[in-house]
Length: 176
Ligand code: NI
Image 1 (cartoon, rainbow, N blue to C red):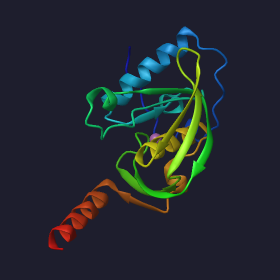
Image 2: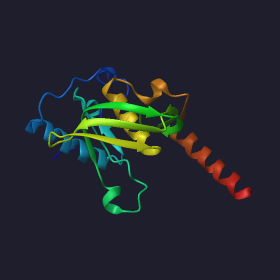
Image 3: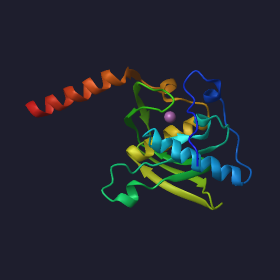
Image 4: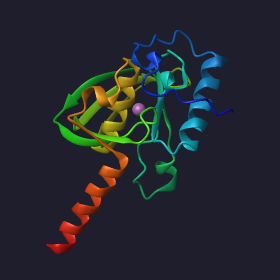
């Protein structure tokens, strides 16, 4: 396994539509292994192939970060040629991105989704996610269509402004 460089906003590869994976070759397996290592090293909860410079419809996600069960918390989903087949409701999510360092944004996302994809063994699977987990999958899925969250955010702020805002909310709770 090897760490790969993370492309950052401004690189035109991040604004392009990625191509479907035709076959799960050893090269795709190495790509997924490297993406996993790169995501973990960068402390991310997801990463898409264009973020390591590869224009393929592949992303990985580790969305159960809040689970108390270690095995569930560390589960990494590999999504090849994913398709969002159903969405329900809306939620406002706070998002960051490894390709947009130093910023956070508020984005309207579906509350619940169903997503179909091929896994690394070549099996098609369908999953259902809601809340934060649904957000992670929508965010990564958008990368495959050349969409970065700042393109669709209602509001952008620096990571410092975001931290201050969280602090204010905490103080308000402490007061009431
Ligand atoms: Ni991202």
